Each structure stands twice: as structure tokens, then as C-alpha cells.
Length: 194
Image (tube, rainbow, N blue to C red; front, top):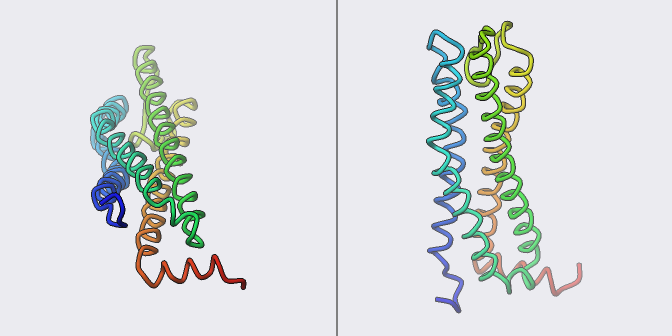
């Protein structure tokens, strides 16, 4: 199989990792962040979401690692296409950039969540009232420092599935470029002048 274009194991690992990363991020935004909203205290709302994200983190990072490592393998086996087929290299580079940016955004979202959790626990210890709608949405009574980190987390958490989804879209383009007609067209565009 090393001499063919059939690298289904690497492609499957990549796609499953990307699906886990994207799906988990969307589930977290839609479900985990809101999961504590029906609890009676702000600290419990933050704790429930923080606990759920912490428990999901190993799976999410496993999906990211699968995406990045299998992506490296797919780049390695597609080396000739990068050189010969017009568009393959630039879309591959864009896809790699999206994956790295998405991993960075995921790491920053994790950091912002830890800041919210730490500030919430600090407020609880000091007796400062902590009033939040849910883990990422403040109420008028939310301490300003927590509001700042909640805003950062909301933006970053929304960015993660956008970047993961864009990575999947680029991967679809690359897979379709393996079709005979696409390959021929890409090679001809590379060797024939416009």
C-alpha cells in the first residue's frame, strides 16, 4: 500500500479525530456550558461546566492528536501530489495552518475555562457573590474579572469548531483531488501555461 494512493487507515484516523474534535466542541458549547444553568448558585454553575470540560479534555486532545498526526502522515504520502498537482500544496498548507490554529484555540479555551474556575473559587472563598447565567454568560452581578474571562472563552470556544470544521472542509477538497479527473486537471494546470 505504500506505493498507492490508498491510505485509508491514516484518512480514517484523521477523519474520526476531526469528527471527535468538532462534535465535542459543539456539544460543549451547546450543552456543557449550559448544563449548570438550572442550578441555584453561580459557583455550582461554573463547577459543573468545569468538571464536564475537564472530563472531556482527554478525548478532545486525543481527537486533535489524531487529526494532527494522521494529517502529517497524509502529507508525507501525498508528497508527489504537492509538487505536481496545482492547488494541492496550497490547500494542504491551509489545512495544516487551520489544524494548528484550532489546537491553539482549544488550548486557549481550556486556559480561559481554568481562569474562570479559579476566579469563581476565589470569589466563593472570599464571600463575594457570584451570579452567572451559566459557565460563559454573566449576569449583572458577575464580578468584572470573571466577565472578562467569560467573554474571552465564548469567543475562543466558538472559534474552535469553526477552525475544526474548516479543517474538515479542506480535507474533503484534498480527498476529492485524488479522483482521476481532478488529478489530471491539476497536473495539466501545473505544466501547461495559462
